[in-house]
Amino acid sequence: MSRGWAAAALRLAVLGLAAAIFLLPFVWMVSFSIKPADEIFTGRLDLLPSSFEGFLNYARALELRPLHRYLLNGVVVCAAILFFQILFAAPCAYALAKLRFRGRELVFGLVLFALLVPIQVTAIPIFLVFSTAGLLDSYFALVAPFTASAFAIFLFRQFYRTIPDDLIHAARIDGCSELSIVWRIIVPLTLPAATAFAIFSVVAHWNDLFWPLIVIRSPELNTPPLGVMAFRSGEAGDRYGELMAGAVIITAPLVAAFLLAQRKFIEGISLGAVKG
Image (cartoon, rainbow, N blue to C red):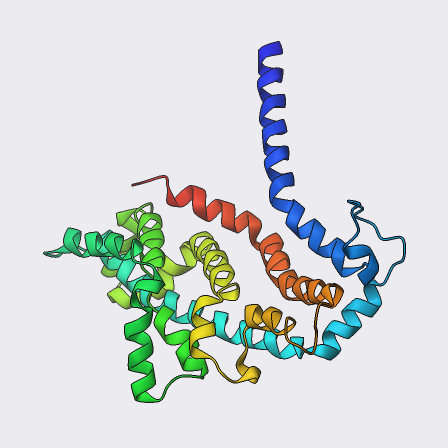
């Protein structure tokens, strides 16, 4: 019993230390967002300010930059990307998991290979195509390169393999087409997998700076990361209180979304690994 308690205490200590390490930058960001400028660069490590200026910093951040526009752009881009990723990945994953056809393993191998290819490798060819077609500086340029997700296909395929084949055979006997089986039976049953992938997708594209920095020129199309960068212009100078306040505003929707979906997220990740 004593060894069991000791092992549990050690696990909790390690997890607590890891959580503290990961949370420290966010705590420091919130702390800076409520401090006056003269307290930010002091040599003391005080989380709470002696003079609270949180309301002023957040008000200035909203005045300096149209954060509501950046947030709206982030929602539009992330929602569009997620919609098309699920639209394309669900039928593809179903075919790889439940249908028998020649070359299936080869196709799945190509999906795994695609997981190894970062966006930086294909950025220049895609940029040249979009530039030639006049598609830069648009929502289309932000969304189109990410509509097909190899990770979504892989995750859904692993999850779909846990669904009994008898359920699919029964649907076919009832006259359902393969696409009808996907959208009316498989996808509703795999909501945890979709939620888990949605968290991964939204976080990745909400925080993406590389691609929007390449294809966007108009300030009104700035995504949240570009909006944070805008605070470092000559107008904002070194006013880090407003910068951190803007970062908090832009980060808050992701934190809220994860807290609301964390149970489905954990369920989707764990069940997707049950059957390989």
